[in-house]
Length: 125
Image 1 (cartoon, rainbow, N blue to C red):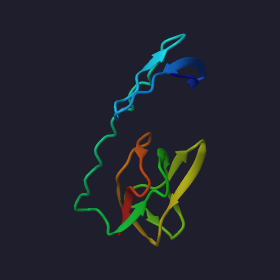
Image 2 (cartoon, one colour):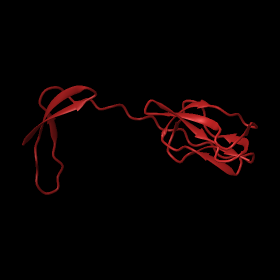
Image 3 (cartoon, rainbow, N blue to C red):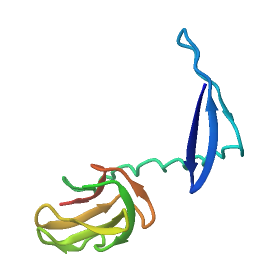
Image 4 (cartoon, rainbow, N blue to C red):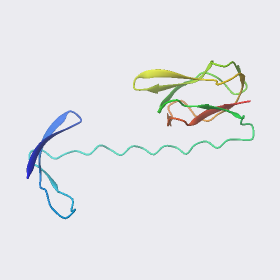
């Protein structure tokens, strides 16, 4: 048996772990207070399907985060380097810029949406 101190959400817990042979999992028993399990992460909404008006130039997220602000609107002309969407990741605001000149054809996200790195956030014509 081994004793460990584990910190969960700022609270420390003393636990005792019993080691077993034969590939069986070792049970963890709390020595002081019960360990609380974090609530499950809500499921992400399915991605919005591209419509016929969708453009051929994809504007992709460079990092995972949350959509903080949508800077451009459908039909708006943008130049290479103009911010189309701003995402927030690790308390930083990261502009997602147009990869080339074009017109915004489709915005695939809404403010507050969680996005993964590489996700197509908008398209341009």
